[in-house]
Length: 323
Ligand code: GFB
Image 1 (cartoon, rainbow, N blue to C red):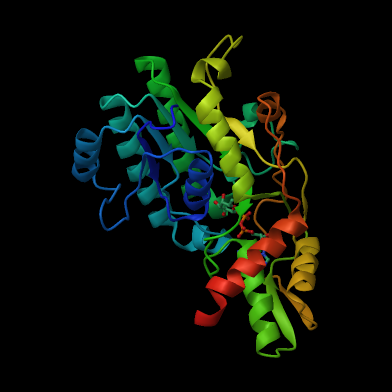
Image 2 (image 1 turned 120 degrees about the horizontal axis):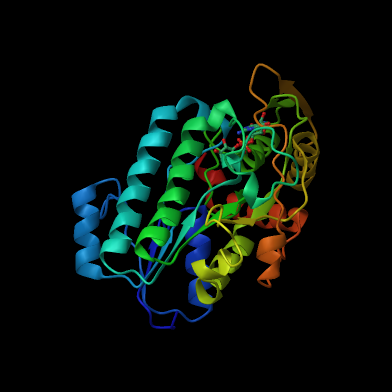
């Protein structure tokens, strides 16, 4: 990838896309293409094809997706499967049709089986049943990964799929019902502090374990992969080309209970925590094995407390006053 290559960042306003834009700009990439969803609806086949035919991007980061936390995944099931299948099919198919040199697709660690052995190696994909709360989203993401792999095998494209763990960072959705646990906790504790409430209600038992990666660290990994790693590097020595995706995480996790106390402390909230066990716990644990990405020279840089402090400051500057 050259500094003046034409690079399309699909989903540039989101948690991952905005971190990617920052990383690409800071590394001197000058020719970035990005479109708002009003300008380009990637779910629309004709619109997407027209965009690729006219623009002819050389490199594509596919970070556009319909995402959410356990609540959104469980409730907006049809939206999760439909929107993601449409976006992936349109972008991946047209990337092949219009000669994109390399594409990077983002999956998610929730696509691994619910009770996979820990830490989860890339090879554990499709070995047993999924977590039901996010099954439609996971099936859509597995389809995206298989689209990339299948186009590579049949058409010789260079499409790479990555499997990030739970992410957090700037430009996240700090939504009580639909957000992921980390940003939602930031908002709940902040609002309880500001409004002098006695307690904050959190979901589930607090026992599940999760691994959290800062979006800036993920962006560094994604650009490094786009610069240095090809699909052929990922299937070297394989007797059969399958499970060629790459896990990206920190390699360490903590309980939701522990996370709650870290965030409570950073926000400076003095009240109590009440656990609403009528809400789902989701997968008990989903820690990634990150040996493959480490073998390409990447490792995470931001420790969890520093990352949450940074994001809390961002939240206070950007969101808190409007809520
Ligand atoms: O980030 P999260 O919503 O999704 O975290 P997953 C859910 C875990 O945090 C569950 C607990 O154990 C919840 O019971 N939790 C506690 C809360 N309080 C809260 C709260 O206020 N809000 C939320 N949202 N959770 C998602 C998948 O799974 O992971 C997606 O649904 C995606 O598909 C994402 O892959 C990375 O980690 O369970």
